[in-house]
Length: 67
Image (cartoon, rainbow, N blue to C red):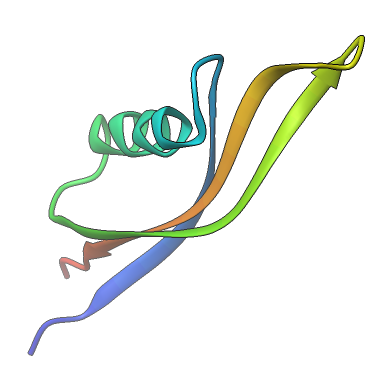
């Protein structure tokens, strides 16, 4: 039986929302083993002087739970 644990992350990028989600995944992969999925929950951005300066992706990262 496989058990999966889910954590929430916020990735940021100056390029795009897709890159922000990838940033969250890349950071999670540094400390987690067995990542099996990423669920993009919400997109936001930071605006300064009427310009988007940061794209943000709220994601849920699923990985296999090891006992």
